Length: 331
Ligand SMILES: Cc1cc2nc3c(=O)[nH]c(=O)nc-3n(C[C@H](O)[C@H](O)[C@H](O)COP(=O)(O)O)c2cc1C
Image (cartoon, rainbow, N blue to C red; front, side, top):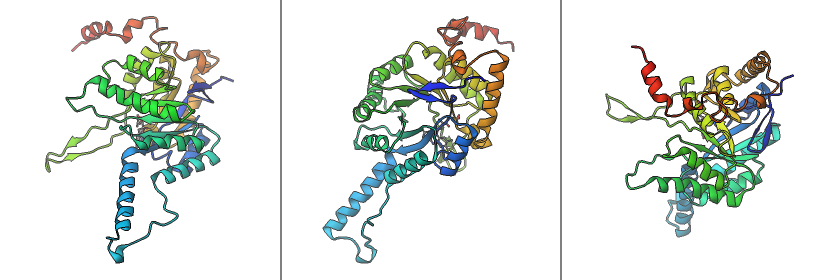
C-alpha cells in the first residue's frame, strides 16, 4: 500500500489534498462530504475584517444612540441577549466542524489592517482550530506606499497574531512582491509555519453599456497552476516553512506537478465547486495508481524531486530559460 501522507504546518495529513476556503467548507454537510471523499484537512471560509468592523460600528452606533435616548421609540429594539455576531457565527461553525469531522480544521482570517480585529485569532485557537490561515488580500495601489511599507503590513499582522496564539499560522500570499523569496523568508522569521501560494485576485471588468465597473468571479483553470508550481519549486529546500499550492489545481497532472515541485499540500477549490466533493476520491485513486506505476513507495518520496534544488536542469525555473523559450516559438 502506497503511503500518501504528508506533513503540513506540523500536522500529519493522511494525504496532501485540502479543500481551501469556499462556500463548501462553510457548510457542515458539504464539509462531511469532503471528509468522506478523503480530504486530509479543510480550510474554513474567511472571517473578513470588513464584516467584523462594519458590525462593530453598527453595534457601537446602536448602543450609543440607545444611551443618548434619541432612537425612534417605535423602531427601538433592545440588543437581544442571544445576539450572534459574525465572530459568534464563525465560532459556532468551527465548533460544529470540530465535533463532526476527524480531520484538522484550519480557520481563516482575511484583512489588511493592524487593528483589534486580529484579536479574534485567539478565540479561534481557543475554539479548537488546528491552524490559522491569514489571507492579506491587499492591492498596493497607492503610489506613495513603497514596497517596504506593504511588506511591513504583512509582517506586523503576523507578529500580532503570533504573539497571541500557539497554533500553526500559514500566510496566503499574492505573487506580487518585488522579492517573493525574501518576503517568504521574512515571514518565516516572524513566526509563520507555512505559506499558501497564491491568492487569486479577481479582476473587475468594465460594462461597456453602463460604463460601470462590474465585479466578477470566474473559477480558475489548470493554466494558472504553473505560476504556483514554479514558485514552490524555487522555494523548496531554501526556506524551512511548509508550502501549499492554491490556484488552478484541477486534475491529477496539476497535483503531481505541485508535489514534484515540492508542495506539502495542494489546495482544491474550483474543481470541487465544478465537480462536487466526491472528485477528491477519484483524484486520490489516480494519485495512488500513478505512484504505483512509477514505483514510488510514498508521496514524501516524490515531494520536491523536481524542485529547483533537485531538478536536472534548475535553470529552467529561472530567467536563463527565457531566451530559449522565446526562440523556440515557431509561428
Ligand atoms: C466562491 C469562492 C469563495 C472563496 N472564499 C474564500 C475565502 O473566504 N477566503 C480565502 O482565503 N479564499 C477564498 N477563496 C479562494 C479559494 O480558497 C482558492 O484559494 C482560489 O479559488 C484558488 O483556488 P482554485 O483555483 O482551486 O479555485 C474563494 C474562492 C471562491 C471561488
